[in-house]
Length: 312
Image (tube, rainbow, N blue to C red):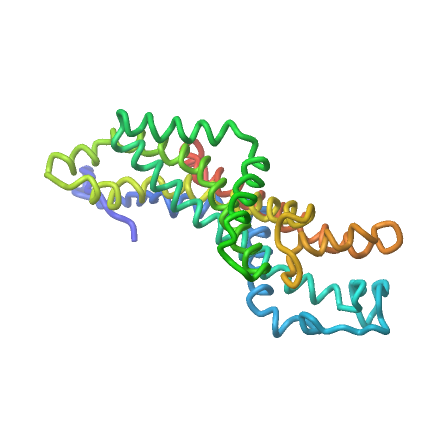
């Protein structure tokens, strides 16, 4: 509903319509809807998530259903993407693999977000020696190559032998490794955003009114830096999916009976020369999901860009 302003005219006071200003979120949403690639990517990601959630009802065959008389069959009407070395339907295993790959990517990214937001907010809000100590530790972690640090964390966790079950041990270690490594970049971004927002007039007004620092951060700071954080989260998820797939591919990540796209690619690599469909199918779906997340993240970044505001 538009507001009105009264304008003096020769015939009296006339109410002239005044265009209602858009909020940051509504303006960003309007720009995002105009980015067709981002909208299509969002629907594709949503479709993959629904497939992962309802894998038990969508997959034509069960997770471990084997047909020893159909071992390593090429794609056919009976098995759309062929079968693996144990006679299992590859299409069904890719559907079940979506559940594990998407869960690992999203879950570890959210954990990294909470860790990075916590330390980044403390560093940016408190400042001083606290900021120096936290950011020097972040710089040390940032200087170590990501894959090297990830493998190092996983090896250290595996050596502790906290779980006797090897499958549970592999799953927990990969979740821990991805979560610990991923928060570093998020902490630096959150710190930079907090440093900007804490100098704003509304933050100073809240301080002058005697509001506590915790209340100011939760009520005023975080809501105003949520846009860049969401953008970074959408770009972090495909990276974690790729890292999980890579670690599983080289034998350091998830292992059977878990079925992720990286596990399927690792199994298909051994038969690449004679049965290329075993690695092509999980490779294509992994490529499409990562492309969709990156296009959606780029669209969100443009939508939340202050320089683009008012151009929708």
